[in-house]
Image 1 (tube, rainbow, N blue to C red):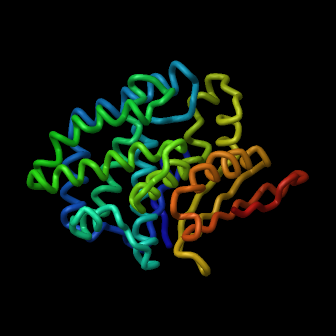
Image 2 (cartoon, rainbow, N blue to C red; image 1 turned 90 degrees about the vertical axis):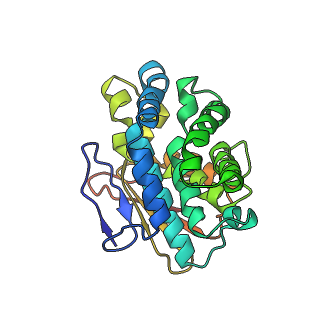
Length: 271
């Protein structure tokens, strides 16, 4: 497995193969469309104001969406390689290539509700994302398939909130991937502004997250942390997302304390 270059926030975006380019022509077309869409870009910038500027919470803007979407598509690839069934598109009578499109669109739009409020944002995301999907989906689908795609994307968006239970593998992927953006770069802004809440401090302790094929499961997530504060990200936030995701038996999560210069309260935890 190789990874891309480290970005300015020291967060890494991982790919499951040596030279990962998504082979799906439809997915690539959709990604090209949404990545040049002015309305979506405006949403991704604006949705960070409530979360970061006003509530001093971790990043929920453009960089967060890029990382969640990349990891969601990585997770999708690894699960597909492990012969995991994606029932969302299949049960709607959609094509197999639509599975990754559902994942990509849901990952891109799952946090748009933050422009209304951080609290209950998953519910605010539904009508906002629905309007965007009504504009985008007809570019790629007929009326019937557009309706089915819209339903599956909105279901995945809603179920990234732990109060809701994913009914599809696609939705489970979004739920877990949302918690996989946990490295220290995500909390840089609130940390530099004096924020010392548990979300900020625990994120600061996470130095690296990698996804790879597992020996006993289709996916192994390895998390490197520099002190015990990182346990909160793993045992509280990621664990909550993994539970009831439908992927509990498909993903193995191991966190390692890599700090060798001080006494380690926690050396290794595994979910």
